Length: 200
Image 1: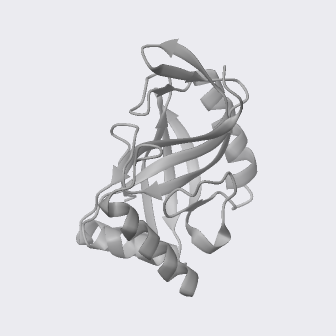
Image 2: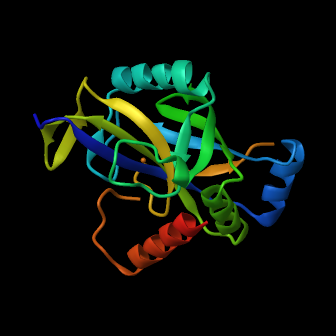
Image 3: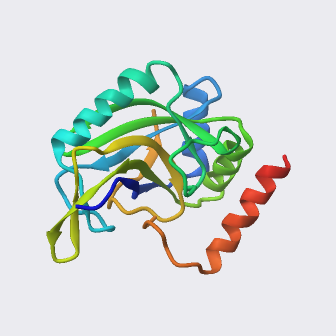
């Protein structure tokens, strides 16, 4: 078993039409509210990680009871290499979590922050945004390059990302990217977006 470390898992993505975005905003008093799969338990995701149902249920219950109830279930636009949510980069707030079989479903509100406005404009342009969990914990090998998250796991937040790992975790209007991807052409885009946010 490894020591406790940052665990990042991309789940799925939101793909919306401009009409769906407008409808969501009309129905939610001008707010863009999305819903979809946040995470999945008891199946191996694209990062080779499996989340046991009891651990993920415990953590989602705790997240709902503390962070959602207190309206501080914040997430960032893209994953930082930190277990701390940076308020400067916050793009959304999780409004609710619930279970549908092995799928942890959620509802998020895109905020009017600089990062939230970038996310909204990307969605309006037809760009898919993924939802991805960030947490701390250790993992244990279960063979064939796969690992299982252990009992010390704690959810930090869910972030909006460009490349999700949980298949089918796409958000849609309400009426886990792969962790540590190698540097490529999109890493420069992410750096530029972060520079723009810092200057605002």
